[in-house]
Length: 268
Image (cartoon, rainbow, N blue to C red):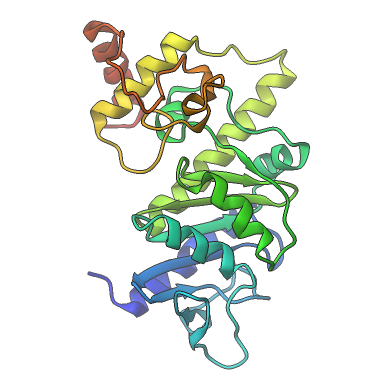
């Protein structure tokens, strides 16, 4: 089990990755990690994520109040957004917020990432909706994010950026990478005349693979707010993500073949 100093070092390492991959500029973005029910480590405000060292990292309680901070360092002004995620998702242990160029461009354009174009994105992410715009450092952003936290593990923030969260810091960061890669592929395929989307049945086949993998987190394969309300299901899944959880119509042979290909691409 990691001690606090090791977690602080990991936060700094992830901060450097985010900065080096151009997912943030200047002092943008923030990271947090839950270390107990009432203790959270988080990045400070006004500091570049590419140049942090462990002593920069602050500790706050579940209300965002400072428990420990060195020198003039203060917790990120967006800590309210992080705390809302932890409050509503007990399974979440880390939250990452960044401004990746392609994903943020979709957020600015008001276009959610819902087109099923790549097996890994469909299986790992599902849909990435857009939370409505809120003024930074206010409760408007946590309130907007709250609408989607129970159903998705990644959310675009209208005219702002992206938010990902998971059961570990590395997993939360990798989700951010996946969101940006998905957005870049979608953007570039649109320049080439538009992506060829999977059919509803192909999406359901991929969702069934996710269910068979027993993957953690929230995903349309298990729960879709649109389907529950009788609306067209996200990812054109044909109702496969409804809470009714009907048996998949995908043939065992087809599921096995797709599973084999996905595992090969994942290097497993």
